[in-house]
Length: 183
Ligand code: DLZ
Image 1 (tube, protein in one colour):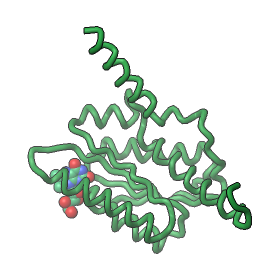
Image 2 (image 1 turned 90 degrees about the horizontal axis):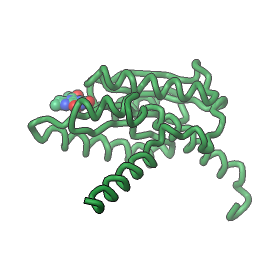
Image 3 (image 1 turned 60 degrees about the vertical axis):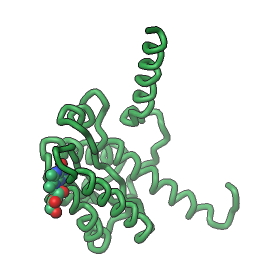
Image 4 (image 1 turned 45 degrees about the vertical axis):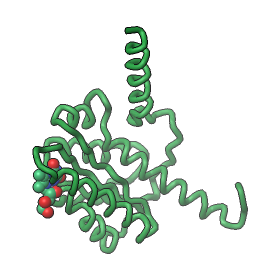
């Protein structure tokens, strides 16, 4: 009984630690000179809209200019990869946040799409050498999605935006210190 309680407590602490929406204290650079794209899926719109809004508000909160944020929708999570590629080719942005919500159904559709979009977005990072952020929920239930779209587990859209800013900050720190080693 005591062991179970201890285990559950540890689990709770682990998920609290992973709630990056509490990133207030972490070092997020100013985003005033950064340009962002947000590509978001229309499937599970009630959720993705909240994730997108969270991402947008977080970018602005950290200094991004609204005129430097472009948002576009795609039909479903599967289309995020190509939508993000169009954005990279034509959108003149420094980082792209990909937002979607996959909810497990009765078939294997979920697994195929989740795998395809994760690999697709990973490949875009490498191909374009710029941050493409994986802001896709992969959940079992609608409730789990709501918990992560402004509910008890924060808003994963906020986290995706903070990650985009941090990655651009990282890139900038390398560019500024090009001539030094091990700075
Ligand atoms: C088909 C499908 C299913 C079953 N579930 C989801 C989902 O939970 N979330 C999501 O974003 N999209 C879903 N889709 C649509 C696919 O992503 C895609 O749009 C279609 O398979 C057409 O390529």
